[in-house]
Image 1 (tube, one colour):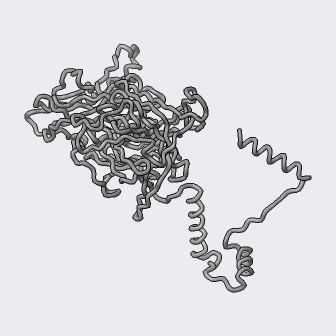
Image 2 (tube, rainbow, N blue to C red):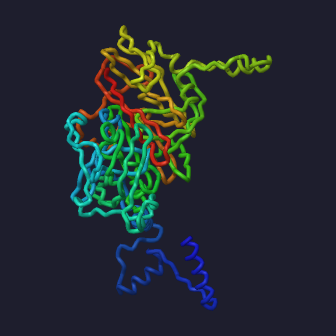
Image 3 (cartoon, rainbow, N blue to C red):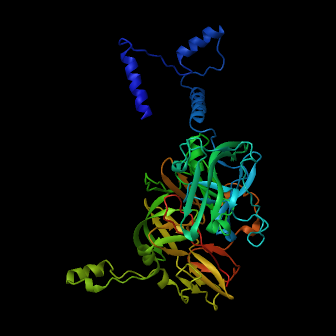
Length: 526
């Protein structure tokens, strides 16, 4: 509306100028006119003035354009990451999620936060009425240093008022200058966070050789009250939302000109990874478009086909691509196609020509994951969220499992390198297909992302991916080695008795417009 009013007033002002039209001549910096002005100004010959059409002429013009575009579009040519480094690590004892260290405020205070593309708000525990304990040795490893943010403890902190455009709960405001409150509920385990919005400095650095340190003001949640899983088993020191809404940190950084509107995450087989803001990916990556819902944009993609072993299953479903969900969730139809053999009864083929078509197009679907596993299936266990679990063969060094891959819209293949989870139960090794049946939503979780770098290009609205060794990008910064889960299973021939360590995993679903994060952790050592 404001742009329309400005344009309208401009038209009125032209009409009131008695029909006169004002024009300005434009000249680029190496034009003959500018050259004449320069000669008149210095009163002598010009030095280093490039010859028109020469390599130097076009190089200097391009460099000048790059400088102007850098000022206008983003402040740094290369990617940015957190001041403590770009390392991320999967921590099995904290919900099996990927974590990194961020520094907030002045002086800087460090927080160990979970990275979540399924939600938007970045929040940390702050001026707590109810937060996770920071000093309980029974809950967390001594390697984890958990912090509590304080508005008074940071000289650069500001409360966000209700007049701010990012304040979505104005109905709870006493006035436009009152502090803006927030409340986010997560589906599983009655998990939530609430508090007030705060404006403070997030410490970043460039990923070039110079490693320039950057201070960017961002808006985040001062989480005063946490419930559910946030109190003990997942993201106890904060959650870093990476979603598409305006309040997410990537949205703020790109809007303020710190980076191009894109970021990448890499997930290594050993649990180590990295995150880079402003990374646009590479020309040889696979790509697929996001299915953007204008009312609530998310990283939603389309899956055309699932391959189990040599069997191709035409599935045709959309799914949220969510780093904040540990395992993959499929709604009933896609889940059933993946896990069980489904017979289409020939009683529907009443006529001979239909029977022939049925035989021609194989009405009897091939056997899927369950029918291709040779090991004995275990009965359902209420302590485990996975339906398809198998005893590892005691007479063999390995158990054979079928390979698994997804065909994404556009034809790109996503080979799943880590489709199972190994559990130790009373000395018996068990492996499960790490896919959970969902009520209505499909979520591609972290276990399907292992071995890849994913690029969330928000400007082009595409997801890019490429098989990648996360250590090739940059040396992974130091992080407690005990926090890394090293269980990995390549496709096809996977499971051996080499790893029977106790681990924790989490089960998460979503059905809220605010966030997909939710957690229900179960102990995998029985």
